[in-house]
Length: 188
Image (cartoon, rainbow, N blue to C red; front, side):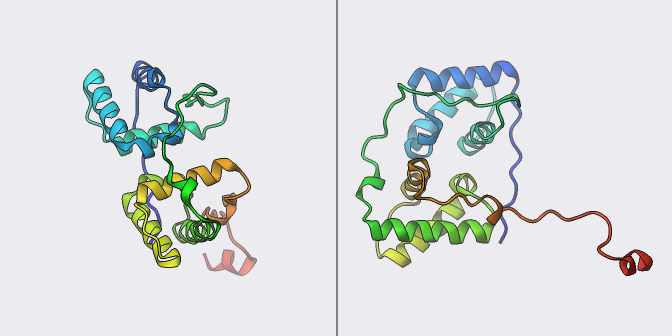
């Protein structure tokens, strides 16, 4: 079951800036949106009222995360907030044992390779989050809700060196144009 690519929502400049202003006023970085889901739903509801739209929290989250990954020269881009952001209270990540962290990393790698997608794709898809949570629970014997578990994956990624960069390991190979050999060309 391959992850289906999501289309990014289209926002006008003033809508993008309104969203950014809403988020910046609370100083909550994009990495915490999933862990503060009730807050995020409320913020998206406010945003929708402001711009007279009906985006889902998942759509707006995908928009932010997609723009966050863009290179510096490509606009629009979602810039990181930098220092002075709110810290996430009571993260589950701090309570994981070394063995549980190892189980989480293994489950994440296995799921990411199976889906051909990384943590952000797993994060925004509820079905994929549940699969990750089930894989972790089966391996570790500890049940943790899917959103908290993905937050743990993000913390592991940010800590550096703990969560491997999968890059080419999860990307689907690109099909080459043309023919591999002369015989194929003759048959065409």
